[in-house]
Image 1 (cartoon, rainbow, N blue to C red):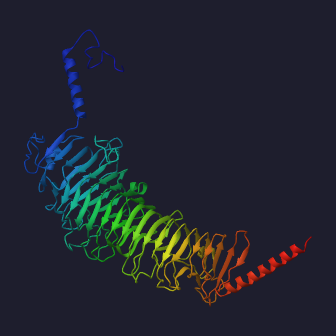
Image 2 (cartoon, rainbow, N blue to C red; image 1 turned 120 degrees about the vertical axis):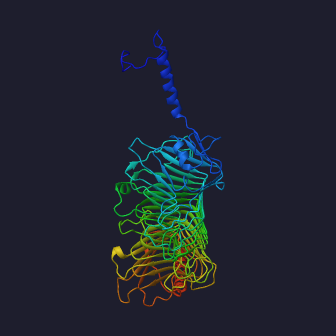
Image 3 (cartoon, helix red, strand yellow; image 1 turned 90 degrees about the vertical axis):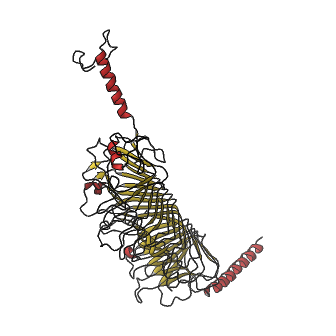
Length: 615
């Protein structure tokens, strides 16, 4: 309607009584061409029966190499990889540009393989995420392929490298497939694949940046998304992944027998997020977000110096989550070393792992003052130990951090030196948790705040350190408000089946405050012990408050009797809000009870006598 009919190049054949056969034929031809461009097709490639001819790519005449199949493919096409091993020239190294939408699909992962053993001095598969502009998008889908035989000669290159050479914008468009949630696919999708028997060349130099099975550098790309699902990483001596500035999801993945084969190397075994200094602007605006769902980490071993974590998340990491994951029989310095903004682990299990440091460490990076938010929700820890103590969580935490877990401590005599949870800085809430067979569960250091609510502590042995107990608080030797350590205990039960009378429930050292309400302590154990840090400082005092009528002490051993040299103030408050001093020595309580009883009997007798004397 915008172009006058006199200027129209073509005229629809039924728009007038006059019909132009040539114009009609040309219009129909253009329509056919337009419709054909919207139809996606399959390009077949076979390493055993293919031929890189001019018209290869059909099921009857497949192409021989991946490079030729990509030349034959159009935007949106699917490359069907038939059974066999793709190796050598024309297959690897393989360069893929995601300016168009391509899908590589094989059958069973064990039947179709890409062998990278012939690759030297480069990545085996290079994926270029280059976009011309906001309206230019594409995506890559790899499915059902086994990647094997990658032995980088200089240890610097990766099996699959995903990067961009120029600033670009990702906005993936549907390929006709859907991911396992029924949504549109990510920019890069790796599904039902396997990575097996890949490793560094032994001691071939010590580069500062080592290659990975999958390396992602999204520093030049905004909104880069990667989805890895139903994929196995088994029997590799190359760390799995390194991710810079990308949203990455691992779903239903298996990480087993990943080993660090280089000595004196601290590269994380499974995943590392990083942001090199001087990274482009997109790195600053769009931090990495990593999610693991329904995945298994099993029998992965740091075989170098023993100082490599399983997973490391740097300060640029925005959010990391683990949902329904299992960590079992791993050996590393730690399972998770986290310096990002927020970490959440929920409905997961960590069992029989041997750590040189701690299962989960939360650290404050030098580039940011804010401590990470760490949430552990419904997490089970069983026999998490290093060579001398059971440790599951330590570091600095923000005020929003929440812990809800079950810890079953192993019955090992050496596991008595330190605590399961070390709060080194910041504040944390521990609720709805069970600590079973543990001698030292929670330890807070100066200037920290800990709230313990609705928990259960069960102890069966004495802590090896005399100043430690199930819950221990250490303050500085001064009374400044910023230096005081505070522990709040509410609706919590302390119990022990052991006959050992030296078991301690609570321990305070220095200027530490303890507030207890609606809690229960069982019979025959020492409830609170206070110790000074400095010998003659009046400010070096701990305050213990029992609040409310609901707190129950089952025996007369409310407080330990060895208060020589201590400087603790004990205060209790009944339900009427009246304050009273809690006596410190256990032998006073029977006398106090006896005197109180006599007084009560005397008052009652006087009242009865007075009552009967009235008319």
